[in-house]
Image 1 (tube, each protein chain N blue to C red):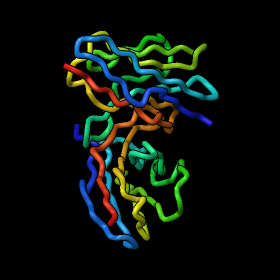
Image 2: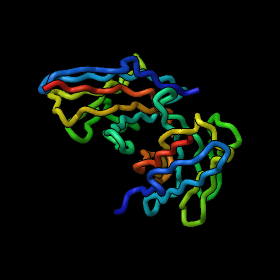
Image 3: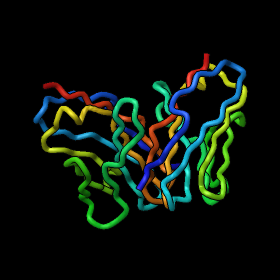
Image 4: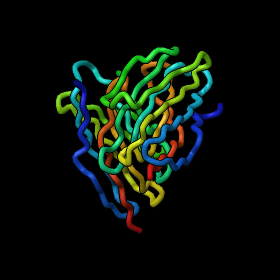
Length: 111
Length: 109
């Protein structure tokens, strides 16, 4: 069974730009969660989508948004990028409330 | 609100020595508990999980964890550490879940 895939793996953007990250969950998984990981703040929960609906949301500004498609694939968008948005963005999928399976992450660098 | 505390930021052990990584949680009901491992540049991999039943849980790579409700703890253990176990370890609680800040394991040869 294929794992969680994230594209792109690496990305360099300039302050003020916007970026879209993509996540394809494991087949059959309807829940997709997004996390931001930085050395200073650790692993922080961004949001979770289940069957195309946002089910949970972390404490991030409105510049961070996401969506989920009918095939459970999910995208995350960050608008008006700031230097502090540089991080590893992790996507995880699950069937529901059980364990999550993580992708390798997208390393975003904002210059 | 649920929370997780991993009190040790770094742990250094010698190869072959035993290991215990601490995790304390705060949760309003019987928790779902997880331990994940992250190697450099990689995503997180599930080591083990506790939902209910036997409080001693066996996981992959020779790891185990014990749920102690009275102490709100879910410590991870391994009897003999291998150099390849050097990584970041995360404890997590809940259906979300909420992650601890992680413990970096350093293994000396």
